[in-house]
Length: 112
Length: 114
Image (cartoon, rainbow over all chains, first blue to last red; front, side, top):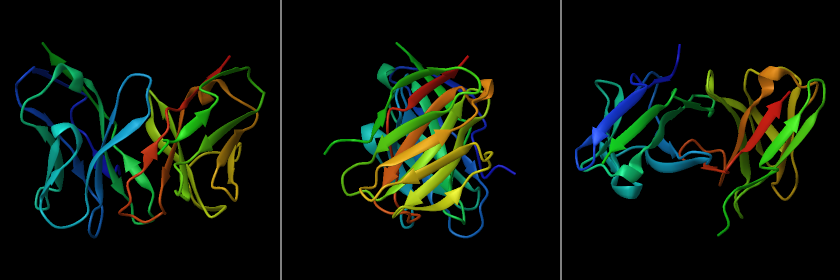
């Protein structure tokens, strides 16, 4: 079974509107969760991570993510999306053997 | 501080050939991981090296191998190339293999097998 799932292949929002990219996980123990973004023809860029502590994690470029243990979710959010946020977003989780497992990715398109 | 560098950026090979890809981690980073990215399979973990030792290996055939040098630079090798090996190969470095450390990715090497 996949350790991390991104249920939406694509998310489309208008510039200025809130952006949410969904992620759910299924690992035993305390999860270590990450969000990365990939722009065309580029490698992945780290956005934020949840290790422990506050359930709301703030990251780069105005992004934040909310860890919800009861729902096993780690959704990425941005209050006001920009056209430049259009990219491919990956959620990832550290497995018990320290491997990093990625979700299938969600393509975000922000229209002007 | 310079980021992760990968060479070459683009590569075209034919079936049956072998290829070597290189990755230089961020200065001070001692852990290097390799991933294969394809449209169909997404991001798949290949292997991870730390202190010149392979710590983890993904579910890839033995044609895929790697190594790490004493300066933390890493190479991966694919022998007897198949059409299905066409992919973006990403290298990532981190301070150490600890579970809390985020990985920093290079731009990737785009391999095309004809």
